[in-house]
Image 1 (cartoon, rainbow over the protein chains, first blue to last red):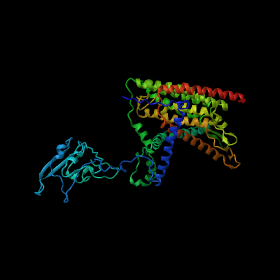
Image 2 (tube, each protein chain N blue to C red):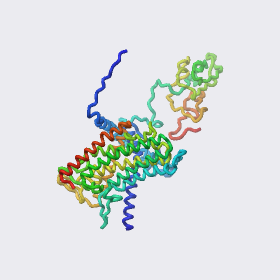
Image 3 (cartoon, rainbow over the protein chains, first blue to last red):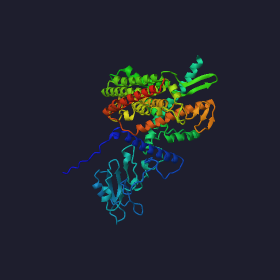
Image 4 (tube, each protein chain N blue to C red):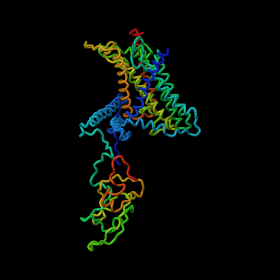
Amino acid sequence: MATKVLKRQPLNWLDNTYLPTLFTGLWITSRHFFFNFAIQTLHLFGLMKHIRGSVTYQYPEEQRPLSKRLRTRHRLTQREDGSPRCVACMMCETICPARCINIVATEHPDPNIEKMPKSFDLDLGKCVYCGFCVEVCPEDAIRMDTQILDTAAYSRQQMQLDMTELLHPRSTHLYKTHKQGQPAER
Amino acid sequence: MIETFVIKAVLAGAFFGMVLNLAGLLTWVERKQSAVMQDRVGANRAWIVLPKWLAPLNLLLRPLNVLGLFHSLADAAKMFLKEDFMPEGADKKLHTLAPAISVVFALLAFCAIPFGDTLKLGDKLINLQVADLNAGVLFIFAMLSLGVYGVILAGFSSNNNYAYLGGMRAASQMLSYEITMGLAIMGVVLSYGTLSLQEITRAQGGYFFGWIPAYGIFVQPLAFFLFMTAALAETKRVPFDLPEGESEIVGYFVEYSGMKFGMFFLTDLVETVLVACLMTTFFLGGWQVPYLQADGFHFPWGASVPLAHGWVITLGVLSFMTKVAVFNWLFMAIRWTLPRFRYDQLMHLGWKILFPASLANTAITSLVVVAWGGK
């Protein structure tokens, strides 16, 4: 195996005093400090908003832009009449490596559609966000494009999504968009 | 007699109030400055929001909330409410005494620092200095040396090997750098021929070539850097935080919690302020304002602005505080820029670079002083 010997630049006397690097370092940090300080002060007065004074996103108030293909919380797509597209074929339940999907099937009143889910439960506490359910679905009935990331709950029960919540994201209990600063109801 | 007592009490109250507030504020400065220089925003979530019927007060509190100033308050509240834990087998008396010793001696050193010129109030002359010692330099170094005592006691009394080793590291580091510090300041003392800090400050009132203020930094440039390095090592903060090393090597206050830990924490910040005060007094002319004399400004280009005595003194105190603030900024910048030394590097720097350099500085200064027929 060929070995590449890296030649180290020998340090001269000045380098060995650490002084040049010391001042370079201080110069860099001070430059950042004064630039960001000026920009952030101007921001307080509503000026120069197009220049960012920091890389921080102040999370609950300010959300990061997410990629469209990012796998976020699931949702069930709907037919035109609002009923779920799901035909309860159990493909997602079968492929789910975390076994977090639980479907109970029932007859669909329309004879052209074989089945429909009576209940479709998804346990976010178990889900590993692999996206297999989306890939395997023959009906494009489940998608992971809600852009909801804040799945925090006070109990495991609250992590379990039922069909209503999956069809209409953020419609039930914990997952309602609540006012900023207030904790979600328990 | 009682009048003198009252004056001294007021001076001490004002100065120590300023110092302690500044030290408390430094926790905020530390958070915010590090954040801003690392392209972050910094802590800003400790909000105090009063109920609706006090809405006008909320309006006043809002800027403080946004700036995150209440984090210092939250810190203090946390420190006081935390359990004060003492390990089994610890020396109870010494364990309690150690933080008090380190903070008390750090604060005592401020006594000798002049923060303003002599104030004429009626026919009374008030020296703006808590204790007008004619050997102020010696007093300050004595207090700084005693500060090591608290640290060693903390390590020694905790009944913990890591704390013990931390105390030993602290002791050797602080003793090594104290020698450099003392020798570096000898250059300044030789140049001005006095040990009183008020006199040293007064002596820096002249001008080189008629327009450069004769500050210590121009008289003793090498001593400035030597003293700053050694004094930063005394404060036990990041490039020199071997005694503590909170993230990797456990330090001398590992067995401390609650307000006792808070006192060690405060000591570091108070010492930072102290070093800033010392640097200001020795090298940046203390309360001197450039071109300001007892009766007003006299600019080198001939213009002059007469000022009342009160304004001159106020400007002096403001100048002192500004210089201290600038030094604090610099120390924070250094603390958040430089990585920590390795222990052998620390000793190498202390004994093989700083110590000989300070000796050489003292020798050369002595020769120059004698050659120029100094005092």
